[in-house]
Image 1: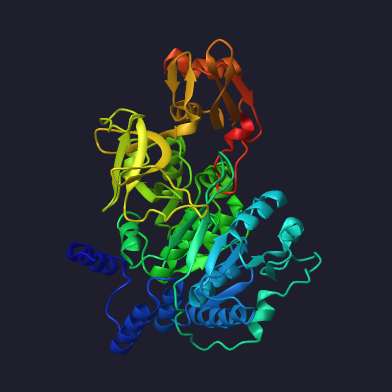
Image 2 (image 1 turned 90 degrees about the horizontal axis):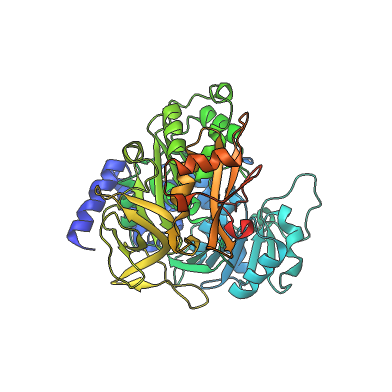
Length: 532
């Protein structure tokens, strides 16, 4: 590690409260754990079990587990998995919602050296079977509610049940609790090789791909995010974003580094989330942007029942946040909103602080320390600030490639995010949409993000998306899909007039369709292919 990076790391760990005065024997033992296990979840929970054994580590619908309990349970689980012939380099697929077993399997795999494949809980049966056949895990750990989806999965894949489904028939497969019960909780030795993680891309434009990553070699990546998103040691963090998604998983990793208590619920409900946060004095909430919209859609008198005086950070990622929504949320809860833009492949690119979103609504923010962003045209030439181009990123955290051997385009050492955007004179990035989403209408390039942002500013619009559909005269024409806000009337001509008064005529949707809700995946991204 470079001296400047080492100095930055130490300062940030001290500033975040992760490092500080402690008993000399604890400090020496914690350093030994870090040297043995590296920057893995195994190291994080072993260290927290040493420093704060009786503090709550996980609070979910099954109750509360302390750090000492999680450490011991994951030791026993790792031994149980090993008894089924699983070891370093073996793939273990995980089809689970947000709960203790998701965390414990992830930690146990780190202790075992196994590779974890995180499966999307929104998959249909055929899609699940296709992904498992392609990635070839040796075992599949699943919540009982997903048992009907497994019919097409190779019967040779070992199966274990994580979370039972109350009132439903219990699958015949062994449960994790039963497996764990047969083994002791003593400390393990590190595996011969560290495990890897495979996160699936969102699949909004095609079949999800597996993106492979090693665990970081140090806490520097965590320190980088903590320098722009002010999470602190021993936070009380509610992770509402799906843990199988890179954003939910990132907050799990940050929570491990910070020794935070994690509050998990299997399904998101806006009022339940506020109630949970208020009841437990939650200091940080990790969400995808659509969850913010659902919270703000609650009647004001409902939101008022759940004051959140301890809330310091609401961290969002996964899709753009309309400027009107970010302003309304911060007006209600204070300047606590942080929005990270990135991708499964490049990790992060920019972070928008509350000040950024106040000054430039709709911005994705600025690159954090050690991150470079550059925009290129279709001829791979860098474009000037203010011009639209393809977004490329370098930050030392790029993925190692897709599991099928493919990768993303790279120019001058920077990797493509697959998006297009522009950078303003203050260095703030604005994401206009996916490269594939650009609409060419009558020879003019239209980036849907600009039109969508404008539509969402209308007081009667709760949600909106713009796609290109075939047109004999213009090649493509713009079609808007709009969700009306409850209690408002809105027609096609009013939508078109709202755009015509503010943008060029070729950006006005020629058709407007009204829907009760937009089709989205589990992480809140709009499924444009279904609308097309």
